[in-house]
Length: 52
Image (tube, rainbow, N blue to C red; front, side):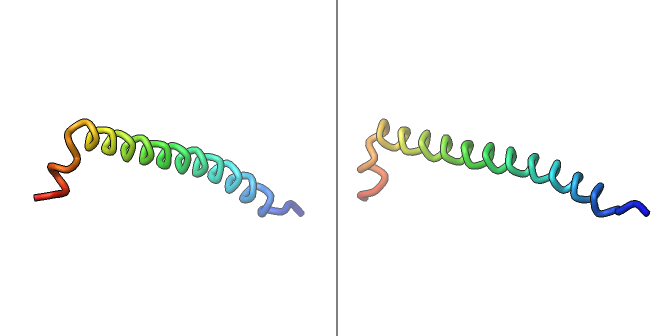
């Protein structure tokens, strides 16, 4: 008798590896986007946007 849960566990391990890569890529892209927006605000006189 062969256990089916072994093959299912192998597929889940592969999918979690892809999920980790996607999570790392999405977090790094979010950080890069936030940094670029912050740099843009400082280069374009931030007080002009905050104080009216």
